[in-house]
Amino acid sequence: MNPISAIFGAGVAARNALYERNVFKVQKLSRPVVSVGNLSVGGSGKTPFVIALGKLLKQQNIPFDVLSRGYGRQSKETLVVDPEGSPEQFGDEPLLLARRLQVPVIVGTDRYAAGLLAEQKFPSKLHLLDDGFQHRKLHRDFDIVLLPPEDIDDVLLPVGRLREPLSSLRRADAVVLPPNTPSPVNKPLVWHARRNISFVTPMSRVVAFCGIARPKQFFAALRQLGMDVAGTMAFPDHHRYKQSDIDRLRNLKARTTARGFITTDKDAINLGALMSQLRTFETAGLELQIQQPEEVVAALLAVLRLQS
Image (cartoon, rainbow, N blue to C red):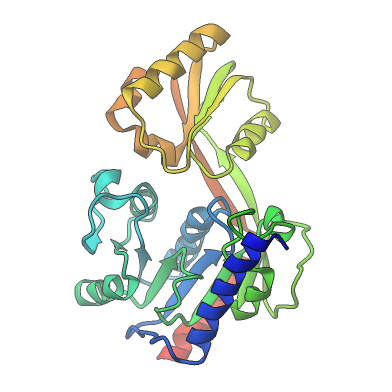
């Protein structure tokens, strides 16, 4: 292991040990918490999985809310997300969750405080904790960890992308892998989920752009779906678009004689009013299809029964 990653890993191990020995206090909410997380920095599909999980809960008529940090937002308050609000106030992914699921989404650096606010305001039976695997100060009743193939062979920060080693999966209750991917760990629950991209009007000759953790995957998926991608442009994850970005994109469209633009639904939120300058424009939804929905629902119902 690289010496710098080894130092980082030692810090992670020490922090986890302090939680496991109850030196660091863990706060518990009145209602059960189901966490959706991963081991790496961004790009594993946590938000699409929370949306897929939320849809299963809605099919079962189980009221729930979502607790999120609200990465990149300017406000430091613990807030209930207004679906018509801005990413500056709430963060792009919480806005996407609120709009797609139409349930309460609460943002706060302190997820315990966010959960308390949710329990004061809403009759939810369950909290979904977005990106919660490393947020150990909040007790969770069920830990789901998404594990893309890239994480299996990756190394710890700052050399690689991993926030924790694969051995940390021992804390997980369920691991989610892509279809036909063997599990690198012996877990009682291993689920599989397939990434899908949906769009309304397939366009020919487009400029594809995005500000997500793994942009090459998005561009490759569009090509696999038969879309004629004339040019691509990648921005940093959670990028808030400026006029200079729009000018660059329009210049790329002119140089490649493209007919329009396509980006992700998260990027559409971060474009805001600037979107009107991009014609013709298409938004692609990044979705996860859970292949064992009955098993997932059974696990969540078991969590609720244990708390009742």
